[in-house]
Length: 288
Image (cartoon, rainbow, N blue to C red; front, side):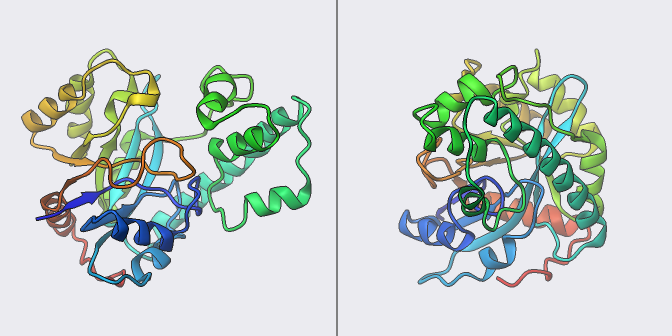
């Protein structure tokens, strides 16, 4: 039936490839389905949904939102997000503003390391970017030879507790789930083990009570230093009747894993589509 990668990022947030390039890469590696999950923005979805391809590829419009859950910061996917929804766009605009403020302050911390990126360099780096993030700062550190690669940038400077890190303003997870459901998007917990709570199962039980409909069960945690086995998530999702999604979290530029190397059955897209319909989404807002 074919495979789908349901977690990618483009140049509209913190990825290195354009939405059109992601479609081309999906073609090249034989995927039958693909989603675009940029952080806090839908800006790349029109290009993603309409980019030419030599064969049929099922495209799922999506996004990723950082949330707050007590002391933890789960990420939330919304699948089959609607186009031109004022309620959703208003909240995303606020989140992007907070991202811009944080990015500016973290860039000041980069300068304190003795790095002085030129205006032209920053304009080129940020061209087309709607949601700047830590990977952009990582590229500055790489280009100015402070670090050798993105993993070193995060380990030394950008991860929580690093010299450059600043906390991000986030939506409360229950508010975010409620927002996605209200606009007809299917809420799914991204890379659940990265929540790093004592019991992921207990978290998923509570998130289901809040209204999540899925969990990302296929994910490569290799570069996150997480030793807990993914089958914890697989088993809990099955027990709770959650849709099991999965994907690469592809960002391009050799960081993390290559597109298509983590995937799920195309049946998962059917399950997400059915769930969106049950939420009142007519699925007609994007061209595909």
